[in-house]
Length: 403
Ligand SMILES: Nc1ncnc2c1ncn2[C@@H]1O[C@H](COP(=O)(O)OP(=O)(O)OP(=O)(O)O)[C@@H](O)[C@H]1O
Ligand SMILES: [Mg+2]
Image 1: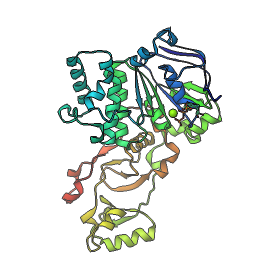
Image 2 (image 1 turned 120 degrees about the vertical axis):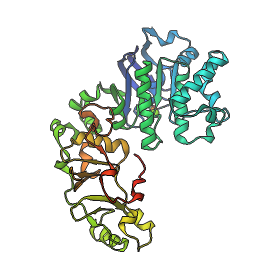
Image 3 (image 1 turned 30 degrees about the horizontal axis):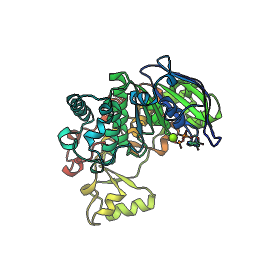
Image 4 (image 1 turned 45 degrees about the horizontal axis):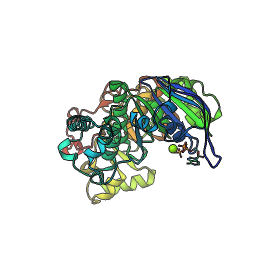
């Protein structure tokens, strides 16, 4: 589909940004370019649509040299999403979405239909948003518009340059899923630049690791982790990821077995004191049988009058795991949802331990261990907490934000 043959770029000032790059990107593939700042990712990507003209070698798309396309036509054939969304501030959302179709002279009806379909696809109500201006949308919403705009003209190839850099983890994940979905459903070929190895591993069919303008390794995430080409790649993916036996580790192997607990009814005064003494920022509220009733964190304690009790302010965690849950599954979940702590319970909801992010630092790239899809609750060993099964549970504590 897209082939780089010995491509180099030397900018007029003599900077050799890309050196002898050769790689093949197949149709329908999602390829991630990753590397340190200034390594030549953006330059490599922009040469594909001739926003940057190469100085040596050749790039072909579907076998045809890109120099044989008209540069403007080529750019219209290829969708492009950048980190700052690139939305035009003085144009409405609708006008932004149909910018390229308009250039391609589509009729009004076709443009409207497309805009409506795409907005619905990213859960944004067309009636509400079409006539707004970009500044009237949140950052995540603008980013969604940036992504669907790249799709509006139905281009086969989409280039995305750190499109989700500035977003919170949940919006980021939603958009990652959207991009994967579009790739699968619509068969788009996507080139995606990121700094973030977890994102690369989550999304890529193949990862291109670029260092100082050179392609160091180009392979599937699994193969790169199994056989890193050199120390640079190894440092990029993290030393500790390289032991296959990690695969079988379970929660019990790394959990903290004695989290700091308090009995129900403990006053916030005493809770604060305990937090200070034990140097922890959360406490687990249990009954005489060590059954978990909730968690209180330092912020909540701080926000509330000191004569309240932990029962008044505790929250029930959304997720828990069991001792024998595979670590790879938990890690995946923790990373994807930005969870800092997960409780470990047995079948009777007794607290057996906790997993913290710190206890998982060695396993950051969990999704490599197997199926990368997000399992629904239960499937990956992380069950949804069934509040109904715990008696006397205070009504307040059910109002936990879903993660
Ligand atoms: N227009 C330009 N003129 C001269 N040098 C340039 C130009 N654009 C980029 N460079 C240089 O080319 C090299 C590669 O830049 P590029 O933007 O491709 O890096 P990158 O990998 O995308 O970096 P980042 O992760 O910071 O976005 C850098 O040394 C950069 O300074
Ligand atoms: Mg860049």
